[in-house]
Image (cartoon, rainbow over all chains, first blue to last red; front, side):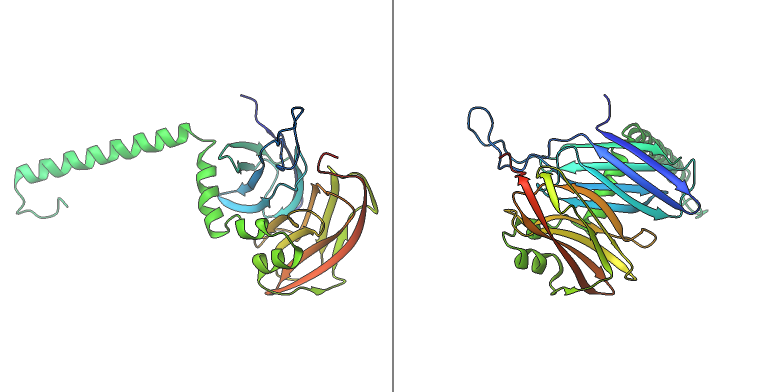
Length: 103
Length: 173
């Protein structure tokens, strides 16, 4: 199954800049559907990035993060060719993960 | 285990079997876990998340002061060393690009608050050592509101705010 996560990580010297885009409805629970019923909240709570067994970034998200969430951050200590693991868990217990390469 | 020369042949044989069984089980577990390669980091993610747990309480607060109190338990002081990049006017309240940067040292956390949202805490980012104190993300804004970036540095909380006008609300109209 195709991953919900797309990532682009570029190493420049000791610094790696990471951008990730995750496919997820991030429903806030405040929006009504065509019938007028509230669409229940469904959003990623934790998005985590790991390099060489260490967590290099964590996002704690709530329903106010936009649909198909995007995040960019930067960390030190990795180099081109290294693996970067991204995983997320949402409020319904669904999850996904991806291992990408740092370019 | 097999050191004791006084041990009977039977005991030594049993110990060998136990060792072999243990190795096989460990191997099977490792193989099984490796099969769930995608989930292994998630398990670690959960373990790490326990140490840095999803701040349920803070996300549930309905006003800014309570959200900050639940998240940090301290009152922020305004600092010009916190840079909050947000548009003056957000055309689409459902997707407002916001980023935070800071020159403060020893940053351990960055959080973003949208005062007029039903739940003001929008996102929180624990920053481990070796990670830059910077984050760019996209948030929903229900209506025109003050947006505040909070940065935890050296155990204190610093902030910077901006008023962002929203033309089309981010809660679906």
